[in-house]
Length: 252
Image (tube, rainbow, N blue to C red; front, side, top):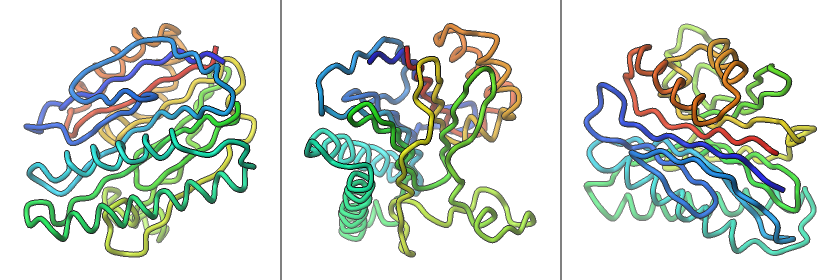
């Protein structure tokens, strides 16, 4: 199986440092961009793409996103072979809980890092099946035949309460949250067919660029490098108020 991949991680126009980070296989990316084709040919060897949006102020958000993505990458690489979809979803949940506990322990031990937290939205390819692992309000979309669909749920107070008067940026669940933490882990349905395009992004993209504009952009610009450059331009034009990180991955 081959995936064409583009990733961008940009500080935006109003922040002085970038707390986002992207993961592509084993490659970590911040304040950079990447284009390539990844071949996943080893049976039983998992592959992951992910976006993390750190928060907590000062350097804490940068630390949280880096630490969680690093731990998630290493745990995915060490997954045992032959897991059923149900068993894999359970293992992803166990991995997330362990990472969450470690993040809280480090935050409590260092006053500079207290309150640090991060989202995580990942697509895990395991035995040619695609799985979502998600906590927070970064997003996973799938585009098929020109139609873009959000497949993750925003873990925000507005979404969980159903009250549109609540600001949309108040997280109800993420890594580092002192409240009850959970990971949304599930196997994709029919997504992952040849030609399908996955988009993972922090809210620096999804808050700045409407879904219909994202849909039109990736439909009109088939080259992922060109589409990625255009999405970054649009996020800047929309205000660039936050860090902007996204991954485009198309199954070839």
